[in-house]
Image (tube, rainbow over all chains, first blue to last red; front, top):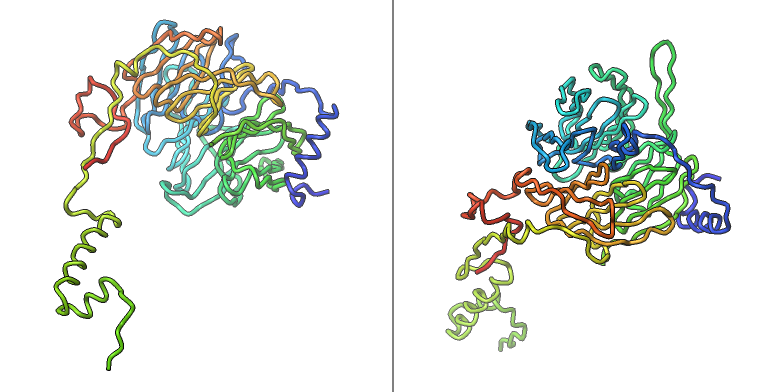
Length: 269
Length: 179
């Protein structure tokens, strides 16, 4: 049966009954490490995991923060105090994401890519420009996923997902553009992509990237949409999708692209 | 004989018969002045913008865990170990024990004025507190300690000099419009 034509509330009810009856699989460590902005362990230290709209991230002995559109590097090696190491204005900067040894700064004018082999001294390696529209970016398995959204405060009249090959961060290659309604925060969810679309709900995309003769081919299909979850960001952690939405924080158990409601922390009066 | 017009249309009536009666003219004049307030146009009582300042003495107190309370507005979230930390923009962080995602437990609230972002490393929770960056030791969530207050790490949203506020006094957090 097709997920998208079944009312989400019906799906939730069925799955909730299923999980209550003990059918749910035990949560396991997905070990995805690079979900959101870091997360998990790094050289013995435990660090927090953030969503794609984070404006502050921790990496080794550094905190990267966007103070408005001023990119600041802070030294947190000392337990007694934190020091400002450097600052630089990046016009329109909005979000931060770390993948491998690179920091991706998403903003209104594109994506700024920095090499953070030396955590306290990031070196800019590239600037990937695209249409002017506010966006978060995530990178997974060398592929970058950037959402562009038309909203008040952002230029442009574009709503889409851009897929970019970041195998070589110094030479990003645009692979695909997928039109969407109002994409914001996103997260890789196993082999799927969970994308928040505010009033248009939470969408799950199946992204298929194949390579033939050194050319990457991309196919994208929306396999599910939960239009009652008006969300703006997601985190995928240990088979659970945590979603920040208008009316609460949803936690959904993930099984492929199948999402079942675990809990909702209510928000609002 | 002309029928009496029973539709008193206020100002329109006045305009049609401007010289008919001084009483009507006066009534119209007062109506216009009185009603102008309804449309936000008030010629006699201009509004002034008064900055609302949060004094540093109040802002720079140690932060500790308060009783859990409902989330009125949710911002960004982070996961750290089995904790779920939910920012309430401008107010602070709601802390949940999320060991069982099907049943998150509210543990408390960390009141951090001006907070928007959170990161944690090795049980040190770093959060922005308007212009400061604070670090809280959360190794014992029942006894959270403020271990660092890094002052003036961030720019204030409103420049105090522009509004005649002494930068050493505090942070402008909002404006009040008074007459």
